[in-house]
Image (cartoon, rainbow, N blue to C red; front, side, top):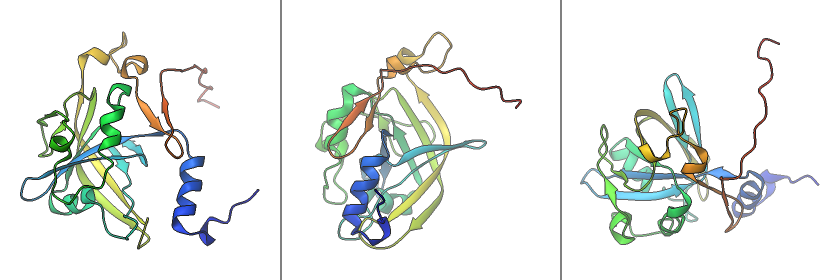
Length: 205
């Protein structure tokens, strides 16, 4: 079958996208407002961008009413954020922070999530997350307008925190020790402990 996405209602198109692009890594993003109020929210449109310069992106979509989410509102005031990764042990708290709280209410406090100070940016990281990327906003690119339109947030990574306990014998994060979760369609999530290897093709061809 073929699905003519541009002709569908935004919610219907969203369902097709999130059910077809799987699994999606989760960026647990902390931000801070100009008056020092923190926000923590998960986003599953998330990916690395470049290693030169080190950068990543995540994509907050607008609310069903067409307004910007608190994360974007904070970034427009203080253009800094932290992406904490989500291990299986933190899947429940991460999911709780997807709730739409009133603007300015602190998800760290509301859901009992411990924070830790960042090294180079103002927003804190999730203390129990094994990996956190401290970023400064490089660019915010709006895509569309109204309900479920998006803002592509591109961040330059200023510092990478990695817990010593998740490092493997090669000195890099071990996927099995990270035990991250990914977003599937609907209410489904995946766990990334099942892996396999494929030999890289000859790059000289």
